[in-house]
Structure formats: structure tokens, C-alpha cells
Image 1: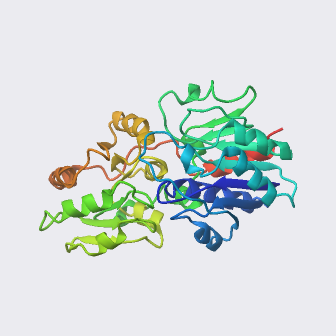
Image 2 (image 1 turned 30 degrees about the vertical axis):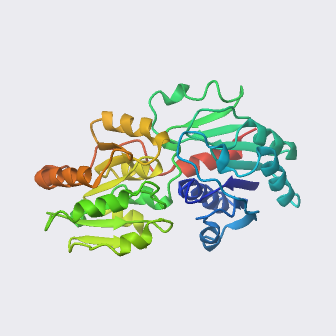
Length: 355
């Protein structure tokens, strides 16, 4: 199959959309399919990173970007009209016969999808908002929402196959292998990661909280992310001895699997931690993460600090104090879940079998 994937990363959009599309792209290639990724040259894009992952990247023209607060209106993320974006994509792909078009973009709805279908391709929509109409053949939402089965009924056409819930989570293969990691080699540490761009400055808040302690009964590895706009400010901060401040980890998922606890955003990173059964404290770094974070918190298995607009260094310090007090009583791992790390395989099979 020839597959085109339309996805963007930027300091405003974040990196999560591209990262989950990379998982799908690699799984498609593993199955012998041909993949091209179309992505616009925005501030904080991951075009070169994707090339380094051996993905055929087609850059879309740069545009004048508009940076607005996260209010739930994502139309400006595209930078052009849906019609212009679709025509640009079709022009870049006119040398191949397309079988599938995949998109992961909050600014795209049925208008763009209908135009792309004029190529004869089927459409796979990756979404987690459930707030606009789609003209897709398959819809994927791998998040653990409440009442997920009814989430998209009014937004997709009759006959659309819906792949819903974490069984279809787009996780790297290593997560499946690490689910049963040897608990005897767990490190006495917390890993903190709030997405590749950390749009709300959670890393700096947590670091300021750590500075309030002379010691803690655990080490804290803070991963600030390769596109963090506050990198310079972070690197100027005093770092306590029990803190390790790094841009990235060479084997992030193995480090997670070896940790006792985690701080992190909701979204796909929460699904990754759940796959590894890692106890954690959640923060919503975007409004669209709130429902999922609250749903996970209600399960009683996660602690939740709330939306990022109410988190402060003081709030993180309170959480660190609580963890220090109950550290020895915390479970090493959460109960088993149905997130087995094989979601990308299931999605590719659904595409291959779609009539």
C-alpha cells in the first residue's frame, strides 16, 4: 500500500501527534508498505527528526504562524485553509497512486478529507476531540475516555470502522516487551516528562519545587524535551544533587520501566505509563486532556494535580512531600491493564483488511 500521513509538530501544537504517527509509519513500513509524511515547516517542527527515523518526509511550505491561547479553537494551527492544504498535499503526491491518507490534526475535518478522497484513497482519521465531522473510512482514538464507544457516533459516516480505546494505542514495540520488566532492578527514582514542548512550563515548576528540598528519599530525573521553549532558563537554574536534568533519554521507555514513579502529562504519555503499570501523578497540559485525566484519576490508581493553569511550584512541592512521606508504602506497580503495546499492529491490520 502507498500511505500518506499528514501531521504537524510545532511549539504550539506540540510533538505528540508526530510521535504517534511515527509509530504507525514504522509499523506500516515493517509490513512492507510505502509511507510518505507531509508536514509543514513550523517553528519547532520535527521534520529532520523524522528523516533521522528513516521516514520519507515531504515538507509543506512555511507560513506566517499565529500563536493563540489554547481555547479549543484549532483552525489557526493549519495556517492555511483546509482546501489550500489539501491541494498542496495532492500536488506533492501526484506521482503515486494513493491507497490511504492518514491525518492527525485538530484543524482538519470532512472538507479536507473529502478533497483527499478524490485521489481514490481511503482515509484514516486519528482524533481525540470528537468535536467535528469526519469523512473517513477508519477513525482511531486510542485514549481511555469514559463512554468511548458512543463518543463518535454523530461525527463519522455510516460504515466507518471505529478503533477506540487503548487496545489500539500507538505505542512503540518496546513497550510491549517491557510490560513484564524485572521488578528487582527498579531504580529508586521518579521520571518526569511533560511532552516534547512542555507548553505550560511544568518542568520549570517542578524544578523550582525540588529546589525547596535539601534531600528526598528518591532521585528525580527531569526530561525537559527537545523542543522546550524554556530550555535556556532551565539550564541556568541550580540543580539539587538528587535531580538529573536532561533534554532526552537514549532509551526513554526502558528508563520508565526501571523507575518507581512518574510525573507527566495526560495523553499518549499517560497511556505509555499505564502500559508499564507505572504509578504516576498526572497534569493536564492542555484543555483537551482534562476529561481523560479526570477519568484516570477517578479510577483511584493515579494522582491528579489538575489543569496546568492551577499548578505551581508550591503545588508540586506539596506532592513531593506527600510522596516522600508515603514512598515506602507506594505500590511498585499498578494492576494489569488491557494496554498491551500491540495497538499499532492492530491498526495496520485494520487498514490492510478494510474493504
